[in-house]
Length: 445
Image (tube, rainbow, N blue to C red; front, top):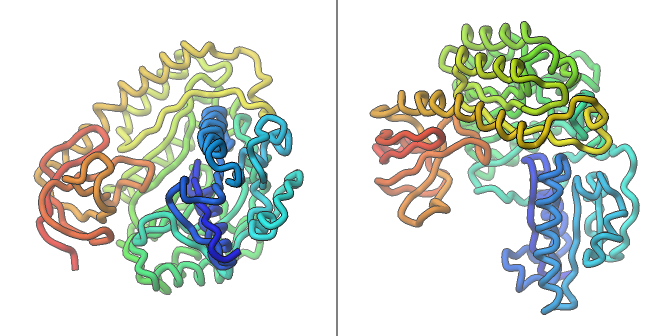
């Protein structure tokens, strides 16, 4: 297959991105040429998300947009992989005849053989594949940062979530395997390594050896790599240990950034969602974080419009936001997903009402996020530079310790020169609810 040009598109979460990077590594190893130009491609690969309906719609739009290229190039092959395929199976073949090959979340490791035959087969009902460090991988992020997927799937059974059905049950990678991959990334110059999983705090539970857990993995990463920034996405409140918080307090390289997906704080809604914690536990966790890590940045997400939710429940979220003043908060509206228990629940909320609740909570949080950023005015902080801004070539962009890649805001650098991957000191001159602006003072040694 030497010389065949293939372009890839990644949709969805960082975990999905890692899958695509493995596919690209396998393809390059087999002689395919990875390109960025769809018009120069002989194959276009779209790795999809199918977690919620807006993601499904985005994936379909992306597929149809690239399918139009076949009108000018009939020999072009269109390959669709990932969560959309795992969720809907080969029923997609009838709806999307323009696609030449479908592969689900379990099967992408066979991408080279499947491309040769262009044979789609039904994805397994329960995915079981787990990647390992021996598999080739081509980063699609800037070369100074990477994601490390420490486990696959999820064994939680939240009433609104399809992840266990799409990705299968929790399957943790071994610590030795993860360390080997991290050491490879360290050797290539990665300066920010973000650990990702559906639930980082559940890492190792399925192995049941008493030794494999997130705390032990982080200790190994700290001792066996020199990567300056280690970031964690995501930490479930029901199993966030004091031992982990103490490690974060002791180790500067382990960023004091905690992304804790709460989804709600009202007791009745949490129970209906089948979340494994209570409002009391949520408050206790936040207070424990603040006591151990006073400077920690906390991010969370809240879902509004879940079946049976009342305005009083929404007001509980608003009060929580005002009381705890979290740094970064994502609000999104509940969507019915076929196959989820919540889709069959009574007291469904009208879409207009969901939007009203969304807008209300966004208005509550905006001045809180702005105040956090305004507190940085005049201060000089470390920034990891990502490169030239997408907005204009006159600005560089980077991120502070409390801004996760592809999730939070950024720092726009309007003064000074540096390269992508540099760590620089930036004096903050302007603050907005999500982004900061400043000039370079010096490079960090």
